[in-house]
Structures are given as C-alpha cells and as structure tokens.
Image (cartoon, rainbow, N blue to C red; front, side, top):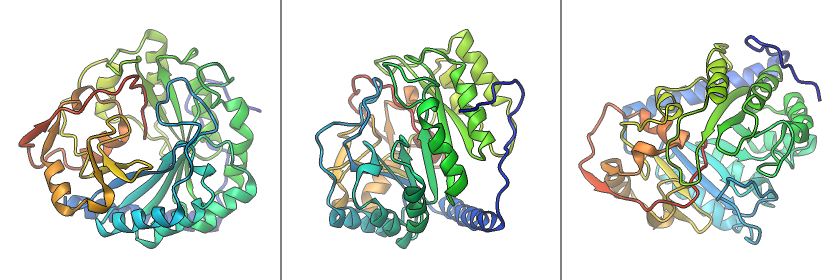
Length: 350
C-alpha cells in the first residue's frame, strides 16, 4: 500500500475515460434536476436511508447499527418498500445497514431504486468489494457509494482500516462507474487524528471525493475537538479542490462543541427506514415516529416538516443537516416533539 503523506492539497492521479466522464455528466444532470425539484416543493422526501440487512461482518466499537443474527429482509418486501418511497416522490434512496453487501439480492434492490426514478446510493464497509462485484453494482445502476475508513492500521475500535481496504479502493478506481466518497473521522475513540489526512489524500489520489466526520463521546453530546484533531480538521478544510466536499457551517459549530440553531426536517425531507419497515427520524432516534412505511403518507410528511425535534441542537448526523438545509429559510416549525436519547450516540453519517 502506497499512500501520500506529504503536506499541501492532494492531487488526483486518475485519468477518467470518455465513457466515465459521460456517465458522470449524466449523473450530475440528474442530481441538479433533483435539487431544483427539492427547492420547488416541500411535499416529498429528498433522501431516504433504508436498511435491507442489520447483520454486519464487523463489530466496530462505536457503532450501534448492526447485529450478528438478523436475516436479510426478503427481496419482495424490499421492492415493495422501494416502490412506496417512489410513490412518496423520494429523490435519493441510500442503502445502509448493517452491511448491505451481505444481502443476497442487493442488485435487484439497487435496480428498483433506479426504476422508481431515484438516485441510488449505498454505505458499505467495503470488505466484500472485488472487481466482479463492482461491475455488478455498475450494471445494477448504483450512483453513489461511500466507505468510512477510520484508521490506517486496524485496532480494537475499528477494523475499517486503510491497510485492509486499500486494494478495494484501487479496484474501485479501476472499475467503478459510480461516484465514490471516502469518509474519515476524528474525535472520540480514534487514536491518531493524523490518520484522517492520510486517508483523505489517498482517496483524492485515486479520483474519489473525501469527507470527514466527527465522532463524539459515548452519550452523544457535543465536545470540542482537541488541538491535534483541530489541526487535521483545518488542514482538510484547506483542500479547495473541486473533488473535495468541504464542511458546511453546521460542522464548524460541531467542531467547536457548540449547539446548532436549525430546523430539522427528519420524518419529512429525510426518512430512515429500518429492517422492520418502520420510518424513524434517523439512525439514532429509532422509535420516533416509528410508523410503518406502508402507512406513511403525504400527511405524515407535512406534519413532520413542521415539527421541531428537541434533539436537533446537539445532532451530529450530517446527512440530516444537509438535507434540512435546503429548507432552512422556510416554514417555522409550529409543534414540538422530544425524541428519546439513544445510549452511546456516536455515529455520524454523510
């Protein structure tokens, strides 16, 4: 494994083929169309995250989103859930877990997402990616893939390590027609903050985008970054290349351990659907509202759009912040709900 550890903004060393550039341009056009639609109307979800598989092959110490016993959701049920998200007008459907690549019929699920007109995304630990599997994901129509890499060498906190996954990243660079983002982390439990810089440089070197997440302490409360973590955070913010996804303002407050003043649109513009087919605000507030997706209607979307969530100020889940930001200027929330705190809230997602 060769990684660039020098200072300064990293440079991509990958030359895209004309076919890949054409596919990327078509994907970007679809994304821009979906953004325009989201700005024009609040009556549909912008993003839904759906779990076809709670089982995971890994056991990362900070994660509360997996088990070792669950069976895959039957594919016919997954297709019904995707169809209902399509009827709700969902723009982006992201598959998560557990580890979604352990689902035996994942390709059918991805293809169905594309059939209902949504962008198809997936969050994976990357362990099962080989050239043939990547080509199958191309054929199924995957648009976006994210891998979180937590350190350079595996340790007792996480085995999602650059040393283990670098060959997988090379195969993605060679074969993937979809966009790939590599997410690294700083914060509680991560021993060496400098690992994030190495991971980010390697991602960009291979032609991917790079983001960074902040993991907080076991009760999920905001905690300022330490000096070493702050230095890494500032360094990655300075990478102004077009293929680096930089922080939004809400992440500045998170890094400083400060609450955010924002309107969370979870349950409306963002949905989290667990393996049991229930709609939740997010992965860390499972049980609220806890309504079966099959019963979820436009009236539910409208209600939750106007409902303030008291967990919002200390929320660290980026995807909910980013989706909700589309509507930050609209519709003050007129009702309030207080979701229960989930023990060991340390997860952050893009």
